[in-house]
Image 1 (spheres, rainbow, N blue to C red):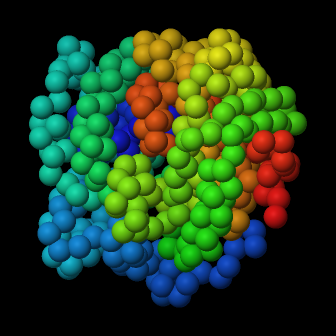
Image 2: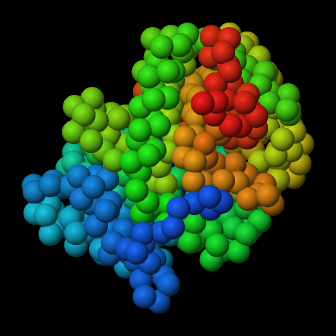
Length: 415
């Protein structure tokens, strides 16, 4: 699932909403990556969390005097969380720090009576009226922390918490997510085919990078896409999809929430780090064709050869194989919102400094030329679909045509 957890971070730790942790998606690498800034690392070689926190607070989120800043993450990252809270207070803002863990999320489903899954989240709703800024650091440690949990319970909890996300959006809370499917954990490093230390260095260097180049590219690509009417996306695996984008606004996660973004409001006030992507909600009901995903994972189990047929913008058929497909299908079936079947977002990576390692088994959001497409919740992309399930994934190596002109060829942007 894409970024639904971001929309309800106020309730994530209070109500155990780590059930909404994103599917294993992300990505990346350091080929052709510029040298890290001296501030990126401490003398001992570990990430310089003070420098990272200062950048996130003062530059990315533009925290100012009087802001109320919610900081959330795992006890694993307490040093960074403390630095984020302290730097917020240093500029006269008022921070609130909360933490959560995989264990806490699992215990909710093991010990809390099911009847409370649909209880109105009054406390979370009240909290959601307070922050002007929310900064979250990916708190998940395991890709299968919720293995064995009832799909129906997960769906009910996600649906119950949706109004909390609605409040955040309506209030245009400036939101920063540190992770973006790339947070360096042992299981992600295994998926990418690299050592955990290698992934960690790539990740923290990217979080603390100078995004001026990405910002310039983002504006250029945004102008081009905003002038177009129809996209056609094809891939060597068999994807062949057409969809209309005329009149739809495109949004850029370029590493900074600017004053112009604040004026526009949600979703322009959301940033995902590492940054470097542009996205939109296509014209509803216009997608036609087929999406083929060669390989992905669901709670640690492999899924192969997913074929998704789309007619009139709606998913009409899904087939696949592998150990994780049955569990994935049960989770999909448990969601009753029809929005889960509507193709609802298209996302293009524009960061040239993140590359898939040769041994990687998963894609990512931000690699330049990466295409991500799917159904379900698209409020993060400017749409109104709130379904708590996503049918889709990253599609490396795609060729994309805009009104008949090739703009991405085999995963590379055309100049």
